[in-house]
Length: 79
Image (cartoon, rainbow, N blue to C red; front, top):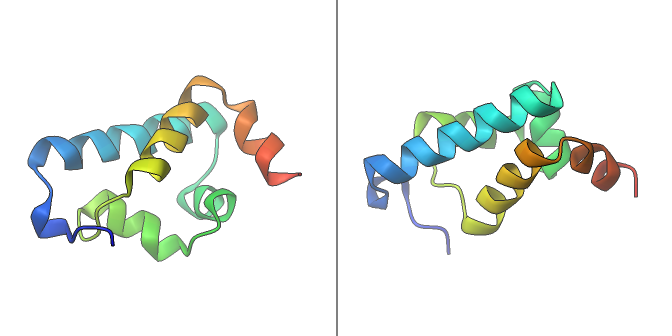
């Protein structure tokens, strides 16, 4: 199970926000577009950003990969 937001440290929340923002900047995706690329509800992305929900480690790694290789978002979305 994914730990609740209360269980994450401020550093973990900041890292998640940075990863989301960098992935959005690199791919040009909105929060809704990023949610679609991840196969999650847009509310989930908003909760990740607000700290209401902790992002799980695999999703965080994928966000970081999107920021480093923006085409990854489009390749994975079109398989």
